[in-house]
Image 1 (cartoon, rainbow, N blue to C red):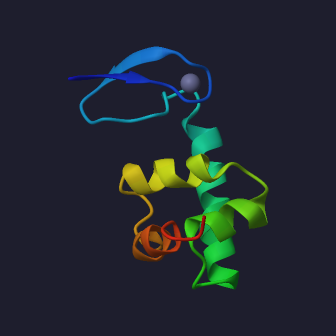
Image 2: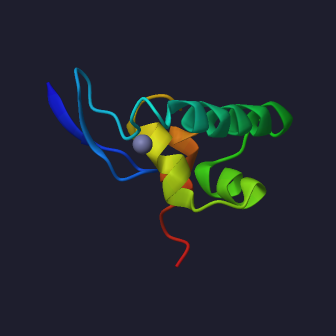
Length: 86
Ligand SMILES: [Zn+2]
């Protein structure tokens, strides 16, 4: 079992896999994830930064889904885009 920390309600909970969202907040999380998928349907080549800007959320919110392995589409682009711009 892994000790997890909910990103929404900050609750500590246990899960068989590492997660950042508890069961009570999962619906919220799924709705947010659906928005990302819908955005990628419209703009298939978006990286994490563009998705974050399009949905007006922090880029770390998008990166969390990548870290969890739920969002793999944008990973390569994001890592490339993240370097050398500053
Ligand atoms: Zn929660």
